[in-house]
Length: 351
Ligand SMILES: C[S@@+](CC[C@H](N)C(=O)[O-])C[C@H]1O[C@@H](n2cnc3c(N)ncnc32)[C@H](O)[C@@H]1O
Image (cartoon, rainbow, N blue to C red; front, side, top):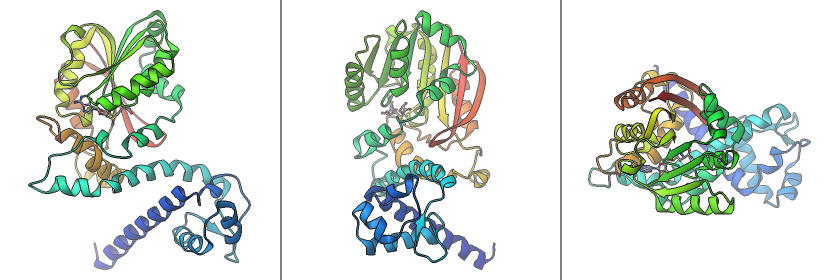
């Protein structure tokens, strides 16, 4: 690559970062709100009066967003707007921006871990803002998630849930999907587990608030699932958590142990198409996913005993390897997009 081309590329990166900062300030201050609902083009004084923000700062922030082609300005450069047909795209990308904001807030933590003498990693749940971020991603369409993650390729699970089966989720976080399943399928029994006491106390509160009697939250380290669970479950489900675990093969093996014969293991994961950095140069979401992996997933895994630091960017080959090593036959692998979560995939396995 010629130096001038490289210079243009670097400038593009810096300008993109500046635009993200302006978007982030605009989102958090309420400036962006007026652009997110249907609107006529607005002057700066009109925007200031609608948002109760100072004109001079609005002017500079809009300067950044207009010159980045995120917000439009009319021919006389007086009235600002987001075209109707582009608004929902902007809304969708704001979720990714929140992820990036969270990663930026972890800058000092990642620097500390990077140093040879520094800590191996940190638990995401101990960091401010993580629980809020998870809540934000709970606002997804549950019908779509349940259809995609549970029923696609395993429609028999729906009938079985209606009749009554045992379902285990490990690394549950907010446990939003399994709580929703518990409320839709009262004949079935559910256990949601995680190693974070904070997570389990929040999930227990939600279960109480929703008045559900057929689901329990348990604090369990996924590397040592209780012996009494062996062979008890019809479905074992893990969602965006395998890559965070210290020893994912061990956990996958434990999950298989907990299944009845004929039971289904569902593994929902993030993946990058390439198996190395060069291949991932073609992947549009790769830079964002690598930064999230460095600031959330790798530290979470490396702070655990024997943690291998898999991270969310390990690629399909590594994910397949982990699941194959657990010994369960995989009968389907499906790649899909789910709202703000790009690059999802699901492994459907049957014991
Ligand atoms: C990225 S979150 C995913 C949460 C949830 N499944 C979801 O889809 O939103 C990963 C979860 O795995 C949990 N976790 C990580 N390592 C664990 C371990 N060794 N044992 C139990 N839970 C673990 C974390 O506390 C966190 O709640």
